[in-house]
Image (cartoon, rainbow, N blue to C red; front, top):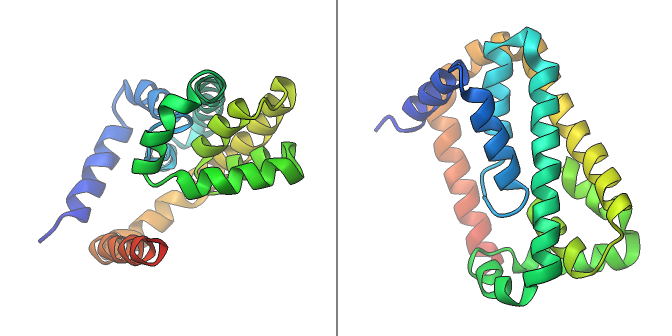
Length: 191
């Protein structure tokens, strides 16, 4: 069954669409506060499809992500009690607990690291609001962390993506199903 190759082809097709930057901005905003899919899945193929625009796409992704992070901050500040059941249901409770511990020890650097790494950034944006982290350090950490990540991804894909994509394409099904297995095993080990 060819699932991931077809999905990959569809995402590559979407990346060249004239409205793709709007989708990228929306995905970047949503992922920072409530949506589980990171914008890298659209940013990377868009930078392969439009190499000269890599820095504009990275800037768009960064700014939309930080605005989404502000929305997550607001959700945490105003609605944490209402969001707690959803956070637990989506499996983000351990990330929230980790975020609380990191905030008490590292503050700014916790948000920066969450913004740059694959740690669920949304857990940190909501926790920052819930714990009342000062807004200016939150914004600076978000801009630096998210910007560093998205500019790095965009530049790498614009510079090396076309050559890498040609080598990656034949293994897409194996990589996709391998990722499903890894996520499944991680879920079983964490529950």
